[in-house]
Image 1 (cartoon, rainbow over the protein chains, first blue to last red):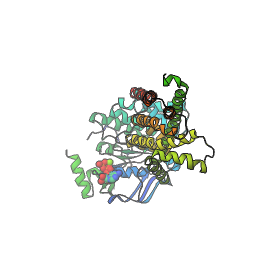
Image 2: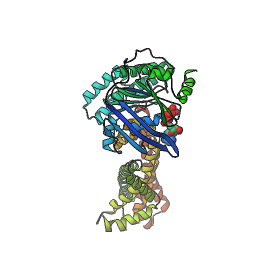
Image 3: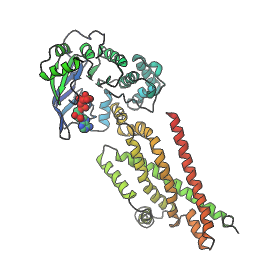
Image 4: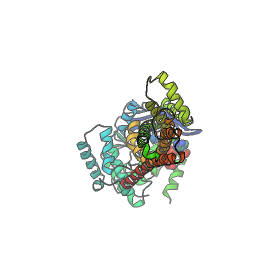
Length: 261
Length: 215
Ligand SMILES: Nc1ncnc2c1ncn2[C@@H]1O[C@H](COP(=O)(O)OP(=O)(O)OP(=O)(O)O)[C@@H](O)[C@H]1O
Ligand SMILES: [Mg+2]
């Protein structure tokens, strides 16, 4: 686990913003497998929630239901008060407000870095080229890959690609950002450059849901840790308390495994 | 005497006829094939069902039967007084579109699913995702099968000759009916087909090379 040397973004307990993402009794099956079981989760504006748990516990699925890349069988999901609509234009509009960063980056392989960050602004937000390009360059500078703007994704390192992916999501001015193990596909020396960008985002007040095993990030940036096992939310706690004094046996067991090797 | 020189105008008309019917059907097949492939991967079930039915029906029907339908049934129902050329173009275009569709669909499946997910999560619609992200990346793998499909289309266009469209094969039949040596006629006709099919594979090889350079 790599540690990140950044101070905590706030001293107080969980922030008091209004509910932004609300999952209400969500259930989902993959065939016979019950991957999400009675999930209740509320994410407040400005809050950073880290989701951890063993492999196969449903973390990715949870993340993907929030922008309806996965449909749910029952229960409700609202974003900023609006229930997720059926597939179609309205859902597309809502997705534009939810940024997503994937484990495998998923940058558009046939487009340059700059085009990657401009595309959503042009085709979804309907901005003109000049202002889209300006905004794209700003964001690329902010994540530290401004000099790579005209290259293709394949010409970049993993860490650079992931930072471009973050810039691409930010270009939509999302209300909330979802990260599904954003550093798991990276070589160790590139993990911190991505975590630093995420730290900065958290400090700037972005609402974030982060699936990660980076305990350093969780400790320093998260307001809350959600621990999942077998499709359930087993424990929710403030990070320090969760890492030093987990209540459930599942969490104790999991932490002892990932912290001692 | 030389059959080619004596009947040069007929050979020329036949060659141009084959070229025209092939070109026109290719355009129809390409447009329809891509659209139907879009249907087949769309999230809307009725569109998917339509796409599946279209391919199943057209790909599994003998082309000659489609020509019979196009020349005898279609004018009764839809295009009253359409020329044999238009009807043949429809038959060939629709038939070939089912093969184009399957080639495009298999090309689509080679594009990593994360590409479409990233596009959708940006708020792009299904149509935008297909047009701007998936199809451009599928193009390279589709070129090779497309080349074979269009060569097959060129040869299939010979059937149109039997349905009063002026094209190469019809010319061959006409001249052999007049008593010319069949072997020689066929040699010239075969050569004409070769010119077209070689041109097609040449163009596609060029396209493939161009795309390889881009990325
Ligand atoms: N598309 C799918 N079809 C069928 N089963 C799936 C699908 N996606 C995930 N699963 C299964 O659902 C369960 C939860 O998967 P999920 O990817 O959400 O877990 P995770 O907590 O993200 O695990 P990891 O840490 O390995 O990423 C797993 O058992 C997985 O095999
Ligand atoms: Mg996962």
